[in-house]
Image (cartoon, rainbow, N blue to C red; front, side, top):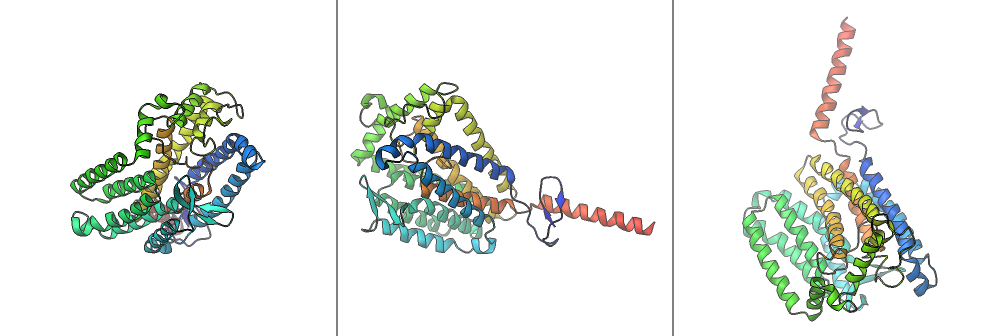
Length: 403
């Protein structure tokens, strides 16, 4: 018998000893609504670019629909993926991630605007960085949970996870992809913080990473220009600050109710990457503050359900893995919003569930699938509730038979 809700248990075909329940339907429904909104906005934001570049205004919509369909299949598979196998693939996942990142640096890598971040995959392009985040979460969760007694020592509890993260970051910097490396470091920091690593070690490491990041920015004219554009985008509104300025125009034009679905003007080749990194700007223009609020409300519901699932795990490793997977989605959403509002320097971060792109969407669906997998775990409180209810029913039956 499996617990299938917050209050009652229902009879299923599973055995009474099985400690699994139904998935978190609130999370699933919220994700499906977000995916539907994303499809609508890709249809609206990508029509002009699709018509110009491919002669088909539905080009990006059709591809995104294919990504969503395949992503739902992947999500379902991950939801019912055996937990014992999931807990033993961390080294394999890290190895595959390092291998794929190395391949991007070979002639097999696809070079776009001076960055080699993609690999050809049939008629699509695969971005290994998106899946390297998941691999890092699986490894860090394993290490921090099984070596918790070493978490307060530097040589054995700090160096190994930092070394693995450093290798991945180094490969990303060689592509180059500075922003993706920063995201990996953020995942490392928060997971180590949650896993019990001494704060003094984290503070020292954070200081070293900040110093390194500043030096990389100062020694790179391209990164320096983007930083200056972030500080005052209107100073070079037709150059390095162009994307931010157009994003601001879109958000300002939308006002409270927006100009209406499909009636936005910034997507008419004014706002670069309107169907991708800056799709939230299109939402703000066409659906207004009301649309942005609905989107934010859905994200808040998703993160609230993820937090509840994290707290419901019995094992530390499961808690850390679920937390890390939720963190991947949260960091992506937070950084994307921060970019379009001019709070951080421009960086190509896709908005989870909404932005066009196969790799980012499939990686997000893998995260959601595994989180739904963990949502099936029966917490100790729920198990005790079931045990007490079963005992009470047995006692009632015994009293009835005795009477």
